[in-house]
Each structure stands twice: as structure tokens, then as C-alpha cells.
Amino acid sequence: MVPFPFDDFSATKVRPAVCLTNEIGDHQHVIIGFISSQIPIKPTVSDIILKQKDSDFAKTGLAVKSVIRLHRLVTIPKELIKRQLGNLSADQQQEVNRRLKELFEL
Image 1 (cartoon, helix red, strand yellow):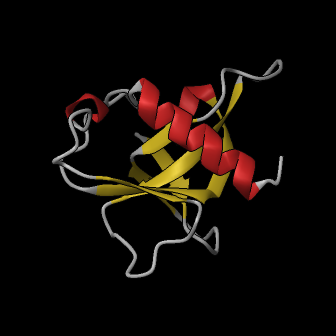
Image 2 (cartoon, rainbow, N blue to C red):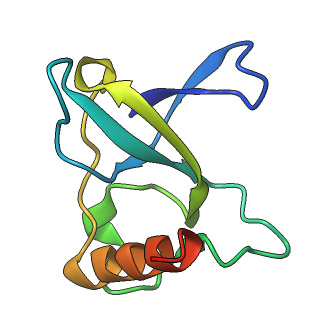
Image 3 (cartoon, rainbow, N blue to C red):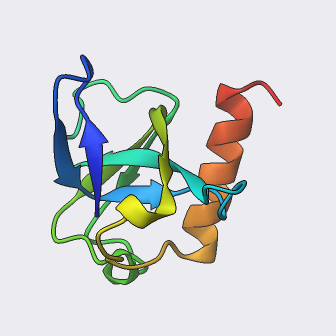
């Protein structure tokens, strides 16, 4: 759970996010990706839907079907992380890695 900025940076809302890196640099920054329970009608290639019926959903700590929106990334100091909800499974992490490579054309 982290304070994630609105699109216009006018405010933040504490919401789930996926931590994509270990701590970076002297200020211990991490890169996080937005998680939302608002599933888009037309998901983008950078969206990963996490469904409650998936065998590894419970590990995430999320309460409802959600979407990781990998095109919504932000860098924050690690100290802003409020608490950890859960973890992605190895398969979910591989899918995140695959989608990030595709998104950044790596």
C-alpha cells in the first residue's frame, strides 16, 4: 500500500501497487506499478488482470479482481510504503517481466 499520485499530481491516494525493483541509490527509491480494481473495458498490452479464480490470487493479498497497469509507474522512496499486502507468484512475476520488456521494447 503506497500513496499513488493522481494523473494531474494534484493529490495522492493510498492504494495497492506492485514493487518492481529493489531499493535504488542512497535515498532507497523503488519503482512501483499501479494496481486498480477498476478493470478497463479494453485492457492495454501493459495491463495484467489478476482474477480471484486464479490459483495464485490469494498470495497477492488483494480482496477483489484487479489489474496491474504497467504503463502507470512511479519512483518513490521506500519509506513511503505503508505496508505489504502480499506477493506475486513466480508465474505472475514472469508475466510482469514479459510485459515490461514488451512495453519498453527491450
